[in-house]
Length: 117
Image (cartoon, rainbow, N blue to C red; front, side, top):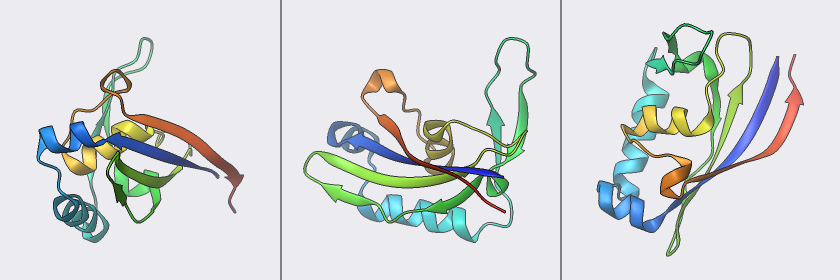
């Protein structure tokens, strides 16, 4: 299995506009971690059917959110096992109930990829 870790950065303005306080984000991430399963829609792509996947099989590790004046940083490790791969922003959106995108200023940078047994 291939695991990739992404560093997500969400600007402070997006957090304020959506009412995402550090406490609300922490509560949403804890709820995700405690859930037995977490269905999420996999976006439609040309040539591939839209479907629902279980995010609990995709998200391997959630780092501690770091809140600063400029916004929030969060490390997210995802499995890239066939059929379970979602983009890191789509995963974060599903966990928080957000609708963020690169166009709104959120950034996702791959910081590590490794083979897991």
